Image 1 (spheres, protein in one colour):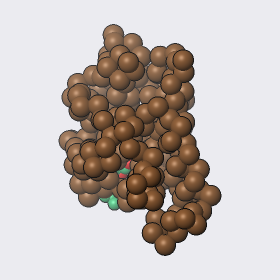
Image 2 (cartoon, rainbow, N blue to C red):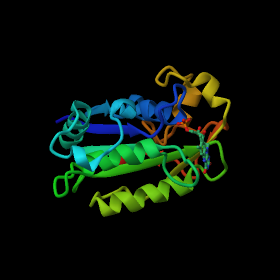
Image 3 (tube, rainbow, N blue to C red):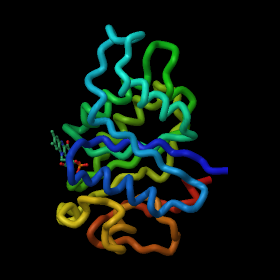
Length: 197
Ligand SMILES: Cc1cc2nc3c(=O)[nH]c(=O)nc-3n(C[C@H](O)[C@H](O)[C@H](O)COP(=O)(O)O)c2cc1C
């Protein structure tokens, strides 16, 4: 049985590290997983007046999360929290009241930053929101990564990253034996079976 993972990367930037990491996670996943990357750039701002008259983009986002088995969030850190675009997408999926598509859906959070603490602030702000949304979130390891800014010059189109950076830029590694590159340091390497099980 194939499990579908909805993926939301919290950045609209063309050369986003977050999107690169998300795509590399998908590329390195074991067989049996299908990843659906949701483009949050077109959804517009959540407005409660539109509940019941939703734009097509909101309905699409909700439908894709509803039909997923789990959600993977990959977020940068903006001012010690998640970017507004990511929070906005979550708000859209969480409404109308009582019909949140996130309710009970398993999730994993990966954060990254060129800063030393790897988006720790964003990571834990996001967990607070996901707890409120009743999402069981993979607790350990805390998947934060301090990313080397030079990664971006090569990492614009993820999936096409050079092997070493590609393996290291991903919190989930398909092979437990894969070693971390010095370009991207993770406090603890994620074993794929810890998430993909
Ligand atoms: C508005 C803004 C606020 C930011 N705040 C933080 C921050 O609080 N902590 C941090 O480590 N990096 C911060 N950064 C740097 C981002 O983590 C960095 O630009 C990252 O690469 C963005 O993710 P992306 O590559 O997926 O677009 C900030 C960047 C922006 C644009």
